[in-house]
Amino acid sequence: MSRIPKKVVDRFVTSIPKFQKVLKVAKDRDINESDTVEILTDILETVFGYDKYLELTSEYAIRGRYCDIAVKIDDKVQFIMEAKAVGIDLKENHIRQAVDYAANHGVQWVILTNGLAWRLYRLRFEKPINYDLVHSFDFSAINPRKEKDQECLFLISREGLDKDAREEFYGKVQIVNRFIIGNLILAEPVLKLIKRELRKLSEGIKVEFQEIEQIVRSEVIRRNLVEGEDAEKAQARVARFYKKASTSRRQKRLRRREEESPASSDHKQSISLSDRLLEESNDSSQSTTQQNNSSDRK
Image (tube, rainbow, N blue to C red):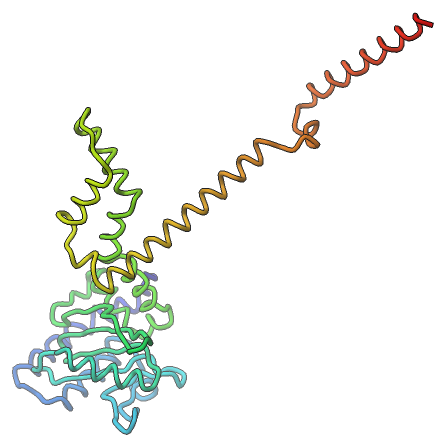
């Protein structure tokens, strides 16, 4: 992830403890959703660095319904925030509702929160509309002095938007996950490596490739990592990677062969100067001998 500016880290360190106390009091008093939205607006301004009056709005209407908070930069909505009262547990139907609002206006990022639990989602404009949970955290457990916690806060911050931190993090999530890793383990190069190491471990024992694959698939990796829609996408991505790598290696081998086997017309250019001089000297000697023999016959 991009380096977090010191001023942002300092802001996290000074402001997080204050709002952790505020949210605790709010939950103890069981405040309503409207008051929770007011606290969230203060958090977005004081912790995450947004201009309260220019970049945050609750007047953003989608199909006749106003969202709780929209983060709008240069006339473009960057986040739609769906807020629930601090005492309400977040549920699946809450994000579905927020996703519907965002999808109807082409907004790709949604935050679902009750102030304590924060969930960051990214929409996939497919048919039907789908979404990924990119990150989640508990605001009350955040330690603003820890680098890992600073990174999760930076995803939502004003400065994080400028550095495209959320897209960078999403790209990492797409690669470093259990589905990709599970299918990498089942890839042929990895299984061949396991086979080679098993032979070293038990010298003289014959191990078949298919036997290793079957054990890994059925006994080592959980079934849901290699079955289902997410697993199929991961498998396709891994397959594309190895196909591209194989093509690249094949092209390199062909180039090496061409370099090692130059055309006959380039033969004199490929041999050393010393060898060329010897060849030319031999050709000259042969020519002189032929001329002398011809003179003798006359």
